[in-house]
Picture: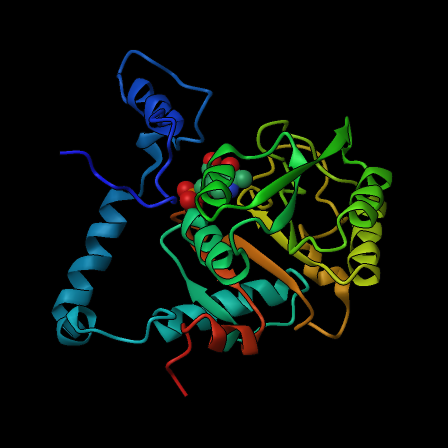
Length: 271
Ligand SMILES: Cc1ncc(COP(=O)(O)O)c(C=O)c1O
């Protein structure tokens, strides 16, 4: 039978990420192609203990359907962690996701109609491109240099594509280049986004994984939204993972979005 697939199904038949993960799964390979954590660092016994405790003390509520934004207490902790990074945020702005990948998918579903233009760094994270392609985006790459996205190129792209729905950016330890955008460019990016009225999607999986040097901006690895000032609901989305327990290094993926958009996304069933 010939299946009549939807347009969202990739036509090429090549699963690049799948191929990388297949090779990386071999015990003889140390892969630098995917961001795989070292398995010996997985906090297995702590997770075992925590799981046991949940089953002992609150199995019924843990196994039951619940609020689709995620466990409220965990969202409160994430909001506190974001506040330490300079972001005004409360639990109602946070949806816990299965990974940045789900956050990228959720946001794409909300913003991209087939043929809509979006701006990305050139080059950018290939699995984000997969999602944008699935939703039929017209993807426009913006040039970078050794310091990351070039602001002159961004301004030109915004002039050329006033219809662009959003800018997807990984300003800290960008994938695949590893570049980190200096603070003056971050400020300029936010200024330009305001001037041209475009949403910024900041993907920040690595901002808290610095091994050397100083965070950008100095002091704390604040997401771009921290530069936006008091109007925290303005259109910057952060897809992030946040360290919630320092002693066992557990990171939780989530998306931080403005409250009215949570309602549109259908992820706010709580109030
Ligand atoms: C920039 C970027 N965003 C998102 C992800 C995927 O994150 P997750 O595993 O949380 O879906 C990666 C993983 O390599 C990445 O480099």
